[in-house]
Length: 217
Image (cartoon, rainbow, N blue to C red; front, side):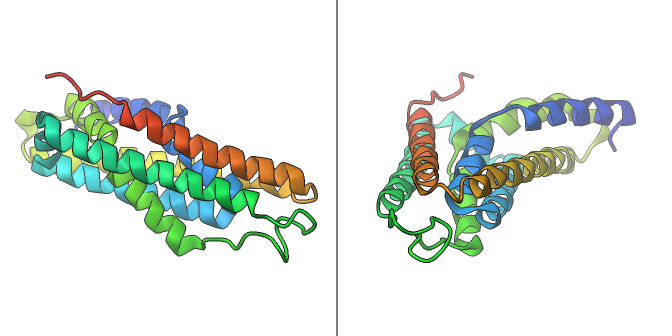
């Protein structure tokens, strides 16, 4: 179905894009700094599932429909932006409410949200991002061979490769960011600053998404 040379070229390009810092990586890093490795890894898999939803939608033409409609694109964009801003503000508020006299990772610390909730939030953050849909529709079709048939299946296979690489990169970032968080565990003021900074990063991502423009064409 797919030419081996073409697939190798796609893999190299997708790998390069996966390790290039972008909104997904920054979100996972922020979540890991705020809640630790468990939440960071869970959010990585959540954004991965959200990415797969875009892949499936793209293979069925749903993403193209959203991108072709200014109203639908704006609605999805604003919903995703509002969700990210809300997550960021909630993280900042939780950081400010930490007991300054207590270890930030022990008794008196802000309770973790848990892996399940982090996973769900990761899914929503990615699923509500129309820029992800635009990426798949702009990048993947360049490597699809109509002459080989099964165009939708080709799209799903190639899109899945990209999602897996992105998820692996996010997991590495989550582990690294949680290591930074653990290193700051003995310094309550620093861990509060890290959490506030991670919340601020989420707000910034949300605002950036709110001002994203619909792809032309």
